[in-house]
Amino acid sequence: HISVSSGRGHFISLDNQGSLWSWDSVGQRDQGIELKLHGINNELLVNDTDRKIVVIKAGWRSSSALISNVGIAVWNKRDNVRNNRRSDESDNDSSALDNHPTAKVKCRIILNTKNIGCDFEDDSVIVDYVVLDGFLVYITALGNLFRVDLDHLNDEINPTNYYLKSYHLMGFENYIKEFDGNKFLRPKFVRLSGSYNKFSCITNSDLVLLGDSNSKFDTRPKIIDSLQHRGCISIEVGDYHYLALLQNGELYSWGCESSLNGCLGLGRVDDMVRNGARRDGIDIRVSEPTRVPTRGKVLAIAAGGHQSAAIVAFEDEDDEETGVDEHTDS
Image (cartoon, rainbow, N blue to C red):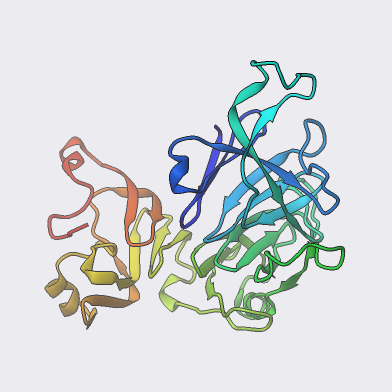
């Protein structure tokens, strides 16, 4: 297995033979189900020659695969499993059954999308994308930002609705044109991340824009001034909180710490309140990105629903006992 992606209650994996696997039910335990992706005419979308899976992405309630010469295929349900039988074996052949089940998946394709890795500028070539709760956002080789709504994935497939249509997030694109500030570089989106119903995108001129499920057509992005032109290289999104990693290895967090679970990593509650956090019942809220105290340099970050993680490089052996200051709880 060479790639894995997780949604809310399922995850998918791609192996080095190009097969796609799913774990999506309690009774399934540790057995993967091989998914066979089908198009509108019941044809297989993946083969061993010119139509291979390049990238997989699981969303909150759906999954996707970017397939060369096909585009982004999206689905949120599969058929019941069946045993996989080779066509040249008889029903009486006891060796005919493979040791794994397969399931048919009826997919929809996002119109005018191509595979990652093409070395030419084209507004249909996908550079990056995220699948969220009921929608998908992607960046093209030209640096434009598009959204695809996934509300009707379970509708009966027919020739009029098989292809999902995307639209520019013009409010985001207009913002970077207006506030880019670099006269010698055409502004474009280069990185994308997100989870649940929120996403973030970073431009080639070091702008950071935030959006959510309400970001459509000409909706303006949410802008946090303290993140602009600061060398932000990564934004990670949990259910209710954010993490930001800067080029210099500094880590920042903000948002809601539900039930004081420690996901912000900012220390004891009393200290957080003294530094500007707000109590909200059993939750605590931090409105602005706040430095997470670490002894080393943060190299990578991740955010889950109610938790956070970071890989930290320590400057000396004495710091290896812990990656955060003594006063933090997470």
